[in-house]
View 1 (cartoon, rainbow, N blue to C red):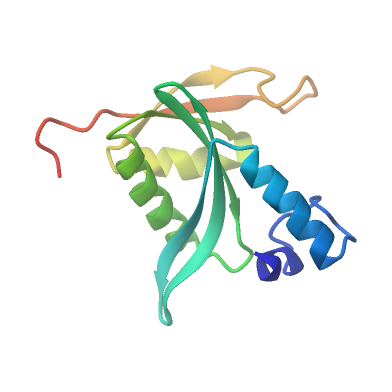
View 2 (tube, rainbow, N blue to C red; view 1 turned 90 degrees about the vertical axis):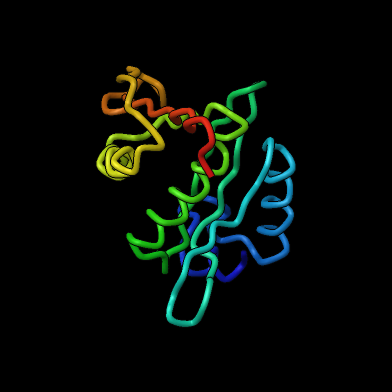
Length: 146
């Protein structure tokens, strides 16, 4: 985790702090979330970590928030999200409020048949201009899906 932090994977989070301060804050942030996952993807060197996902839980709904590590390639991001959403949707309704710059990414995830776009939510991320969100939710797996 500290390697990802030192390489700028968490912009604005604990900038200028030392390693111990960063780890203390990261442990608190992870403990305050419903769950945390390190996303992995294939690389020429085997499976490597490509992101950290903290997930808020609201009963049968989960809301994942991903911080990508600076070395994560677009294909690795896609593969890890598709895999994770495919697993989570078997037990939960996955709700992703995506910032405008992430709309194309999640629109592409929808092409895998595991999510759908349900609409725009104004001011989801704050009242400043440009803080709208597109809401994506998981599709139920078909009966007998593996």
